Length: 146
Length: 146
Image 1: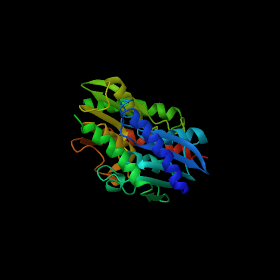
Image 2: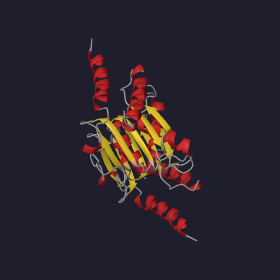
Image 3: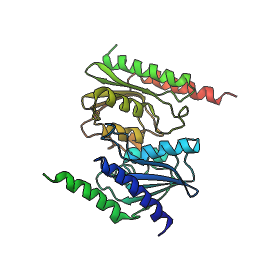
Image 4: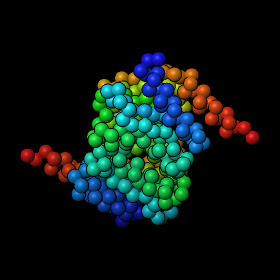
């Protein structure tokens, strides 16, 4: 298992925490020099707050851990392609590398604001894509059951 | 003074709170049926958190006040054109109307993600534009002094 797969597995564990609270299962991990400095999972329903996406919480947590608001040198792992809001936050934080699992064709930033990230941010997608997507599908299929 | 000017004046008061903390002076007010339900001002330096923009805090506050995460029927007043992150949050919250003062040519959402807002959101810009812009200019001019 590669490092990217290892950290995406941890992001999936965060996503499972969201699932256990009946939230859309998205999880995020931020890593700096091999150390996890921030975590988060979607809590928009629990907190009744649209800004409580996994990435926003992980960015706030990582800034606290590192003692500064810029996350240069950090890699952000998230199970689903970030939305415009989160891509904007990832851009402001100057995250150096973004790795995501499943693509979000409806709300993903690439369809709305492809330049939202910092110009130096490297992007990799599709890491553990199937597992990330299946977790989301599981959630939505259960929602549709009578 | 129109209602829009009245509420933008309140947003400017929020921006002045940011200025007093040596933060880039941006302030935000959310109004529902003539009642202020959320306020916020930029605290990114104080909190060392890139997500601590005025709008994000006001959206979180308004959701708490109203007991729900959707801000349909609300008008969001902000002294500066929202960035991509904040426009994404305004979109998720389904804010019905966005009113902003100064245009942000470098980082404003209209240059990056013009479709980030909810499709039904009505936008008005330029309310008390001069006062909003002058407050920002005052901050940056003071920063440049030796």
